[in-house]
Every structure is written in C-alpha cells, then in structure tokens.
Amino acid sequence: MIEKYTEAALPVWGGKRGARVSEMFIGETIRLKRSELGLTQEELCAGLCDPSTLSRIETGKQAPSRNLANALLQRLGLPHDRYYALETFLTSSEVESDTLRAKIDGCIARFRQSLGEERRQARLEALEHLNRLEAGAETDDNIARQYILAARAALGSKTGAYGFERRRRMLLEAIRLTVPQFDIDVLDGRLYSIDETGIISQIAEAYSDAGQHKKAADIFSQLLTYVQDHYQNVTHPSRYLSPAALNYARELCLMGCYEDALRTAELGRKACRDYGFCQPLPGLLAVMAECRHEMGEYGQSRDLYCQAYYLYLETGNASGLADVEEAAAKRLGLTFPPREGRV
Image: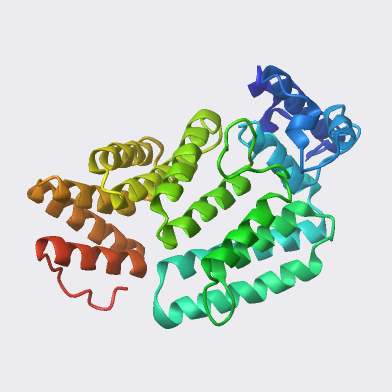
C-alpha cells in the first residue's frame, strides 16, 4: 500500500510537480507507516520536532524541511529518496548546506582512507567546510548541529585526533540533540535515522580505539541487529548492513572470537554481493583472512589477503592497503608486488 505514495507517482502539472500534492503524499506516507508500526507522533518525532509540527506535516498543512523529512522517513525504515520530490522544496540555504555536506563527507572519506600529508590536508579541508556550514546553520536546527558535532569528533582539531574521553562526550552530546534519552547500553526500543546510527557507530569506534573491544562489540552487535530489523526497505540496504557487519566482525576478531567473526563477515560479504555495494568488501575479506589464519586455514587466509589487497589497491585506500600488507607479512610472510605509484 505504501508504494502508491512514491515520489514517482506524484502528478505533474504544467511540466512541474505540484508542491501541495507532494506535501500531502509525504505526510500521508509518514502517517500510514507510523500507524502500521503502532507509534505515537511523540515517539516518532522525539528530538526532531514538536508533535504539533508532525501533525501538520501528516495532514498536509506544513511541508517538512529536507533534513526533517529524511530523518522521519529513515526512523520509519522507509527509502527517503523515493518518497519525496526533494528538489522541488529545497531553499537556497538548503542547497548550500547540501553542497557543503557533500564536500565534508568526501573529505572525511579521504581522511579515513589516506595517510600522511594527504590525510592532514583532508582534515584541514573538512574543518574549513565545517566552519562555513556552522556559520550558516540555524541555532535551533538540531539535525545540522548534530552533523557538525559528529564530524568534528571524527576529524579532531587541526593538530590531530581528540582523545577518547573528549571524543565520546562530543558524540553523546551529538546524538542526544535528537535522541534526548539515548542510552549507549540499550539501543533497542528507540527509532534512529541513518545519521543517528552513524553516530552510534562512531561511539563504538571510539571505544575500540581505546582498547575497550568488549564494549565496542556490544554496541556494534546491537547496531547490526537494528539495521537488519529496520533498514530492509531502504534504498541500497547494503550501505548500512555491510559496514555494520564489518565493524562487528572486526571487534569479534580482535577479541579472539574467530568463528563468530567469520560468520558475521560472511553476512557482510553476502550483502555486498546481493545489493552491489562493495565499499566494505576489502575490509570484510581482510577480517576473514585473519580468522582463517587463526583457525589454521593458511591457504584460504592467503587467498583472502590477496583479494583484500588488490581491492584496496584498485580503490586507492592507502590506509586499508597498509593494514593488509602489515597483517599478511606478519602472519604469513606474504609480500605483494611494488605498487608502481598507483596509491
């Protein structure tokens, strides 16, 4: 029934989609899905907007901002990019914000995958764009403030990464902007947008980087379960399932739970193959390689390390490449041909 409310079904008047009609469709879609899940308006919009605002959206009396529409649809597990003619309603400030966020996301991806000077430059560029985004953000826009705070926690300052405690505090502050009662020990029972699940993942990463792998694994386990339960209907579910599987498998491997880690990594690899989103694939293969080695399956370990290495090489992920080279050399005495300046 929900599918009849897709953005593609909106009528076209004079070559343009009718704004009033599309507002009604998004509100009706939200109302129907919320009712189907047995949620009150207060439960769905907690931390995002007032229930009265959601009521106006559901009845077509108010058009939501792009950020609010995305967050509401994502909390409902709906494919936000199908249900809303977003480009029709973007203001100039939203266009500028989207442009800056795209640049910041690109810089953060480079930051995570690069080493040395390139990594430093990616951090500096991202921080410069963040300053511009923050200057233009409304003080009551919790979604924008959340994104900025989480990005700063990931990047650190110009001089380097933040320590564990500061990073953890920043991320908890960020998620509590839209999930005020958030409890890192109990993720179940609440609804989360994609950005919110990303922040939860960052919190777990902070614990992992601090050597608290059991705590990190517990968070990643809960997060993987949430993604499996709630994001099956979003567009490209592997974008969320396979990274969640990778993170949890990596922690299990670090804890010496190799069989469980292998099963979880296999789940992530299957999601990559089923849905065609393969960015996490080399990381999953590297985890599987380590598990196979620790289980005494050295031939399979070698093959998996080789697959991970060449995927990292082709995607230009210098950080992942260095990790695989080090792990393969340490465990198997395996070396790879010169890179010939490709990374």
